[in-house]
Length: 379
Image (cartoon, rainbow, N blue to C red):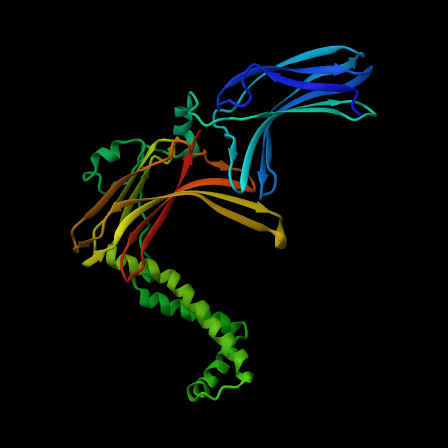
C-alpha cells in the first residue's frame, strides 16, 4: 500500500467551473511513514470516454515537491491555474463523454505511488475576451466578400460576419449531363477492359438472348452478375458527376450564406439562398437543418470501427412551396437558433462533436440542390 495519502482541494466549487475561470488550490500530503518522494506532480487535463479511443490532453502540469516526508506530518502544496477560455466544456452524450480532472501523484521509490483525482465539471458559458479569438479563428477573413451582387445586398457585404459562398464554375461535363454520362461510362468500361474484365461483359452480352427467351442456366449467373456490377458502378459514377449539371439547368448558379460561422449557445445563425432560375418549375421548398452529431472511432486498420449518433436535429423552413419563373431572381432568408444548452464543438483525434447546417432546395422529380456548412459553437 502507499506510504502517504494525497488529497486535492480548490477554492471553487469543482462542479461549477466555467471556461476562462481562474482558481487556486492545494495538494495535501499525509505521510504514514518516513518516505522519500522523488516528485509530487499535479496535472490539469481533460479526457474522453465512450465508444471511441480514449483521447486526453494535459493542459498544465506542475512538480510541487521533491524530498523527504516524515511520519505523521501533513503538508499542503499550493497551486493556481486557469481553465482555457475555449474549453472544451464537459460533455456527456450517448457515444462520447468529455471529463475534466486534477490528478496528483507522489512518486515513491520501491513502493506503490500515491495518487488522487479531483473530478471537475466545466460548464458552458461565454468566456471574457473571446471576441478577439473569434476574429482570428481558423484564419478566416470576415471582411472579404465576393463582388457579385454587392449592390443587391449592400448591408450584408458590409457585415464582417457574413461570408458569401459561391460555387465554382460548372465544368463542361456538368453543363452537359449527357456527355458526362457517356464519358464516365467510357472511362469505367475502358478501365474494365484494361483490367481483363471484358470477359464477364462479353459473357453478359452473350446471355442476353437467352435471358429474353427465358432459358438461362446457373452457368450463366457469374458472367451476368459481374457484368451487371461493372455497368452499375459506371452508371453511379456518371450520375455523381451529372447531378450538379442537372441541378444547374433548373436553378442556375446558387449563392448561399451561413453567418456567423462561429456562435455561442443561444445565438442566431442567418441563412440566405439566392438564385435566378433558368426554367419555370414548382419549388417544393427550401430548408435549413441544424444538426449536432457525435462521431467516435475505435481501432486501426481492418479493425477500425466508426460510430455515429445524431444528437440534435432542427429543421427550419426558409421558403414554402411555390412556382418560380425563368429570369426572375429568387431569394430566401431565415434564422436558425442554436439551443441555449447546446454543447460546444469538440474535436480530438478519435472523437468529435460537430455542428453543421444542411441547406436544401427541393425540386419535385428532379435532383435536389444540397450544401452543408460546419459551425463552430464556442463555450
